[in-house]
Image (tube, helix red, strand yellow):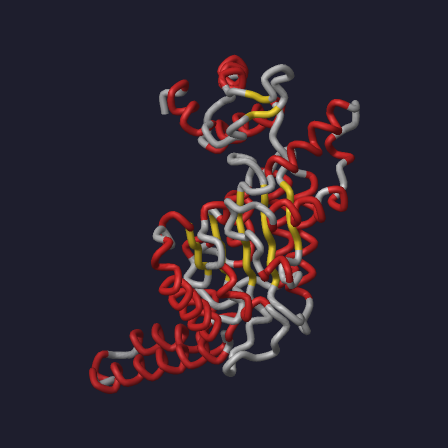
Length: 339
């Protein structure tokens, strides 16, 4: 920083001197030298360099946890288990300088309950550019791995991609969406990267983060939530311990899931199975309110209620949970508001 200030301070002094006192070439060399010194100073101080350019792990660990907690508190509704588990898991992992393996989170629940949203928030809390960061890599099963007959090719490509990017940035973040649509056996190709190896071919994967998103297990999650509701118990009283084992077993035995009989589960390489509870009517209204406010408009309570009422709910008799969560809220707002 001192070198940068010195370089900037030199320029007006040179320009204020009489025209004949400094030859053009001398002036050019002086300016170039000052700029070079400033650049050398910037590169010499990583924190200063990373102010101008994106760096691997841009934010300090404590700041990551604070940003993550703040965003989850403000923008995620009806998911008390998610808020507790995700923040503690990410914070603890980033603060652990002697991690034995990468962090692996598996997020499960119906569509629209917040899985993609949470993975986005995690990415943004670690890297300013979020999902657009060159250190964040997102895979969608139906887009990147569509053909069952090409599974061996996908395995090779996936291993090469992970190996190459972790070599560049140890704190790389990998997000696998639509795990319930992924061909069984494909995800097992990354098993060595999630295991307890210190190095694989000279590369350490212990600082990397892997996030898996899936609808698989949603039935089991709903079963637990509905049982609490029918017995007059609050959903906030549901504990993670009541979900974890049942959820992992359900996903492991689901033949329509990319985790079917996966070694990642069998070898206990998934650190947390995070359940996303189905959203109730009140949670849908919260989503609508936040979306309206984010667009800078005054909340019309009548429109807010109408949008929430138009959503479809299940089970058919009780109509407790939104079958699309908050996923279609954005489109419905476009219809009601003249943005």
